[in-house]
Amino acid sequence: MPAPKATVAPTQPTAAELTALLGSVRASATRMHATLAEMTDHQVNEWSALPGWSRGHVITHVARSADAYRWLLSLARTGAGPGPRADAPAPERALREGAGRDATTLAADLRDSMDQLLDEAALMPAERWSTLLTSLPGYRHPAWFTLHRARRELEIHHADLLLGHTTADWPADFVCWALDGTTTALGARAFPVARMEATDLDRSWSLGPAGHTVSGPGHALLAWLAGRGGEAELRSPLPLPKPPPWPLAPYPGWS
Image (cartoon, rainbow, N blue to C red; front, side, top):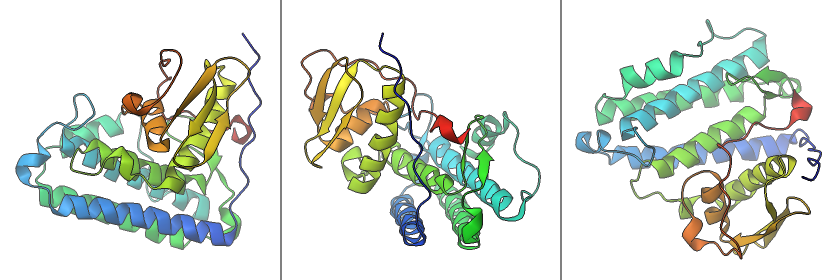
């Protein structure tokens, strides 16, 4: 087996890039809010794309994730979180307690959580964005990466709701960002694919010397790697390997 590739963590975004990233998070949230505004109480209790989760589970998960990201940003900004940090069993408790709420309450909960997250991000001094934080799963990353995590939650789980927003609706820049990180992590794990090509984005990624090329639309590549389908749109000379659980922990250089 070839040796894992070294991974290089991305550098901190510039002020302009951070402003654009905040705008992207806000735009992702706005699209999800629009979807939830049309959701009925009956639809809340129907199954999502995630096994065992109703749409109420998905929405509750995204709202509580936004709360966790706001807590992390507050910690980076002030040195103290806004109250005690949630423990490891907290997400499961939140799902049990929140999934059965009505559509209006769920939509308002998500909107309030996202608004508070964005308000906290707007208060962040420029010099504090580089602060290293420890996620609940245990890996570390700079404060600015929290914004990427928030956008990922919104885009991925918006598609999981099965309410018209599909993987093909993922913004191209989000797909490229997610594939940049995912292919880097897979290359470090000696994933048996040598190259991936996003035929609609004019982008490709080299993972390592061993394996073959998988090509197709960028959103289908990401959907496959994220466990959200996509295989039917991909071309591969060999059966597609099973990706590891996603999302993968970010760059070890941050740890």
